[in-house]
Length: 394
Image (tube, rainbow, N blue to C red):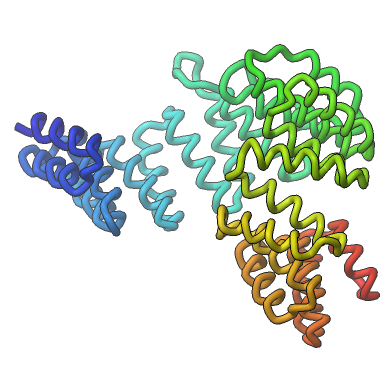
């Protein structure tokens, strides 16, 4: 019986036996070759086996050749293709499914996500507008689409429009992300007091959510150049919740921007005591010392600890490169900074890498790295300051 095989597959999957789960689901599909549930389950379990993505795709393609109207199977195939980086093939499957079910919220939303991933924001917006224009009787949650539209508007520089989209999101899973982005954008529009009132007047049900709003308020103030007020907001919140890890970290960073290194170190040391596995706390303290060219032995030890906890974090690797640079170990510095830059080609990492290359006599490479980063992130403060020190025109 196919149903019994599918039940066995589910039990095997629950027991983390993916090979057995895949085999049982395949057996169910063999018993009932037109059973869409069996095809979808088999593909899902096969995909979780080592190097099983290609097998899952082939399984669904074969099934759809027999059952071309199986929407759920086609939807699953499209997702597998997208995960495999085959965006065009995924879109073809989604669009085929959409022709069969033109009022499907799930397919429209997935097509919007795929368009965004492939850097087609206008196409993504078109699909979302179709999603929002679906007949009232079609059940769907509009809030994810409102949030998505806000993100697309924000990314394209349409700040006021993004604020409007975020304001439409109701209470629920998307509410706090939309609210905090709305407040930050109001701050960018110069409406700082309005943003603060919005954050402070919003009722929330947990300490975690209140901390999120406090962090957003501090960000609004910081981006408005009001670093002292941002520090005060975080300090007051920390008095109420003295052992909150997020507040301790943000408070430390606010103190660092004001040059209050003793306060910064105290908050980070407390955070490390509470959360000894917090790689970013070690990194922040170590990088601050390295940036100021002080306590370099301790800085390197802290960054090494952070790197042991998060060995593939580009920002921590960047810190390691920078402390090695400060210590005059140019070969090791360039190696680490190149690794960080490959992982995340960001302007601040480019500033560090370019400086290490320049000091190593590799000035042409330094100029190339700086030029690339300037084109991607024009006006980045750290990069601009670095170029000014080396008298390089932007």
